[in-house]
Length: 508
Picture 1 (cartoon, rainbow, N blue to C red):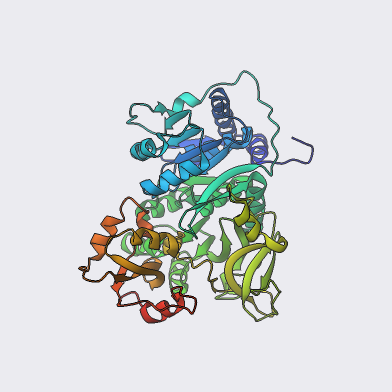
Picture 2 (cartoon, rainbow, N blue to C red):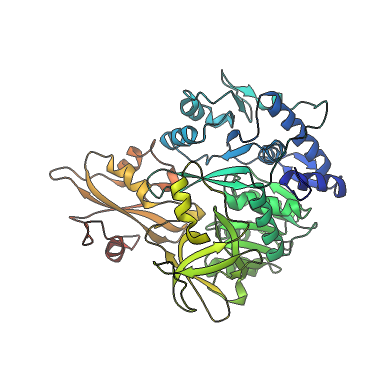
C-alpha cells in the first residue's frame, strides 16, 4: 500500500475521523455512525482473516438488501477480498454456474436462499464455510455474527486499489453469465463522477431500494458515503415503505429504474406523503413518469444516466438540458463512436459507444479472449450504438447486433440466454427472443417460437413453469407467439431485425 494509494477502505477511515458521530447507514430499526461503521468493518475483516480469507479470495453474497452488504464491502476492501454479488433472482442452473465459475471460499447467504446455496456449493472444493445473514439457520450453516471479532491489532495488508474488489455477473451474451470484475479504484472513480454530476454533499440522504448486487444500487450508496451523506437501506422496493421513508428521513436523492417512479407516484396520489426533500433523481424512466413525479416532488430534478456494469456513469446530466439524450460524457470519461471497422464516425453519425475512463472495469473473470476483444484498440467497447450532436450530447440509438440486450425494469437480459433455456423444451424447433415495449416495465421479453412438426402448442404459463429452474423469473418471456418459420439471413442465422419488424408488438 503505497503513498499514492487510495482505496474504499481509506474512504471509510476518512469518514470515521471527520464524520465520526454522523449517521452513515440506516436499515430497519438499526443505524450506524461513521465511526461505528468502521469499527464493525474492522471486526468483520478480522473474522474473515481468522477464517483464512486471503487477498483475492472470493466471498459470494446472496440476500435481500441490508446493512450487512455495506459491512461486507467495507471488510473486503480492507483485506483485499472480492465480493461476488449474486442476484437473488437467479435459478438453480444460474447459481450453479456462478459458483463454479467464481469458486468462492466463503458464502454469505440470506435465510431464504440456503437451499439454493446448498445445491450450488455442495461440490465446491474451494468453499470453507457458509454463514447465514439472518435467522432460521439450517444444518451446516453458521450465524453471521460469529464472523465479528475484536482484532488484537490493526491488520496491514498490501492492497492495490486496482486489484479486484467486486464481481457482478452480467447478462449472458453467449448463453452463460459473465463475471464483470471491478476494482476499488473503479468504484471510487464512479463515486467521483456521481458526486460531480449530482452535486452530492454531506447533507444528502440516499434511499437504496435498488438491489445491492446491482451496480446502480452499489455506486449510489458508495458515492453518497464518499460525500459523507446518509444511506437508508430497504430490504427491497416497496412503494408504501419508500414514500414513508422519503418523508421521515428527508431523503434527497435516489437511483431509479422503471416502474419505480410510477409506483411511488401512484401511492402518493392514493395516500399523500412528503416528497419536498427530494432534489435529485437519476436513472432511466419515461418522460411521462418523470414529469408526473417531478410535478409532485416540486424540488426534484431528474438526471439522465448512461452506463453499464462494466463502465458506470460515463455520461449523464440534467434531463432538461437536452431532453431525449443521455447527457454529455462525464469529467472522467472520454467517449468516441466507431463503425464496424473501428474507425471513428463524424458528429451526427451512429456508431458503437466506446470509452476510456478509470471507471472501466478490470475485465471478465477468466475470459481473457473476450476481455481482449472488448478492450480492443485501447477502448472499452460497450456494444451499444449512439450518436453525438453538435453540442456534444450523446444520444442512445440501439444495441449493437452482438449485444441485443433487453432491459425489463433495469435488469439485463440477453436473448441468447433465454433462447437456450427455451430450446431445451422437446417441442421447440426454433426460437427468437426479442424485447418489446411494455407500459409497466419499460421493456419486456417476448418469445417467437417455431414448434416441431406434429406437436401441440403450449401456453405461456406452461413455458415459464418449464423454465422455472433454468433462468431467473425476470428473464422469462412475458409474451409468447408461435410462428410457422423464422426469417433467416443469407448465412442461415435468424434475422432478429425482421423478427422484430413482424412481431415487435407486445400484445400480438
